Image (cartoon, rainbow, N blue to C red; front, side, top):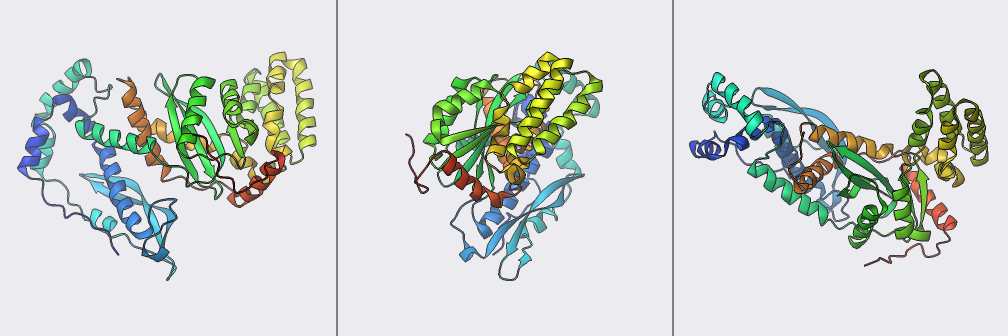
Length: 420
């Protein structure tokens, strides 16, 4: 089976007239975001063919009798106008022949012609270079090229994306760990909750707009996830920074069914931030060495020794290390720091997502309203999510499940109890 890519003809005058009919600020926004919009469309075209071959991501229902499976990504490129734009090409494996499937849609995208001069002139608003320069300058004051006045098409597309994201059913995913962290988006903040499945897959479960990690907003986020199908009754590990709001929220919502791993990276950086530059690298290495120790008691003794040293140098650094120290050693106590410490000992799993969010929203200098924040965030999350790899040593997650059930004294492994 091959994908069906609509045959591309030369742009007709009616379509150009439609472009001309748009308001000036929308035209300018289309110009500014044309590469990113094209990249999103290309990803959707490729993903459509992949779905036809291997089915929805994470779905147990596979077409073609399960013959095809997703197999990561390869680097590629598509020419958009005169630019050669790099993109990630989904790999699909044919299990019968154990070989890659060549995507027909990608082959046809590679054949896209460059736009003719008339199209370029029309897209450039029919203005001379001098006029366009003047309009752009005036627009900075009247509309603001730095203020996203997103085109009608983009607004509609991201509104649909947001709705789909907010209504996702997550009950099909066996979540064993949550990673919660905040991201600042130019004076606005979002708190993101990423789930890790028993198979090691990373899935963004939800997010909220909030400038602080207060327990009320996070509690509402967690309750919303439960309503959408999150099952935590087989035990769940929650990884976060040192936020008291997050800790209070997970205790109130999950109670005896969760354990909390405090991010070792955040703890280390918080401690050394009190020290002089000449001392920072020295104690960064000492703390790192202690956290790499596999035995809980040995690691704790090393950290307490560092604390005692810091008391002579900077009492605030010592207090910072002491505060919440036990929670940074949760995986040590579970005996899984060697197997899962790299993946679940810190919030680094979510940092790549935060980086993608920053890349997608870096041009935004003022958010016009809350809906815009949510739409952009949802679109960026779903775009980044398809490139997420499984966590390291994911095969050890079954051991984590057994250890959590024993630690939390959970008897029914197959519990599917949910909270309304």
